[in-house]
Image (cartoon, rainbow, N blue to C red; front, side):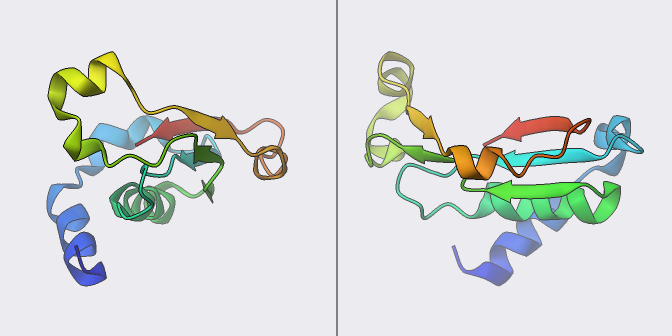
Length: 105
């Protein structure tokens, strides 16, 4: 999906009250990559949350162990063989002490 469409999608479905609990907590948004690296939606969503509530976005804090397109697995395949990631230590080291971690995909 092209960048403008991803931003439009995030803007269309974003509901600020659903995330109001993040206000004043110095959140860290840890964006897990898609298995193929093509899905930018979680990153743009994290950026939107950061623009509303402050904090820090840490993209790419993990790397997929297998680069298999999730859509090819189907629903049951995703449950039987979920995506597995390895943390990248130097990215995790950027998390400030006292921040609240908010992970998502």
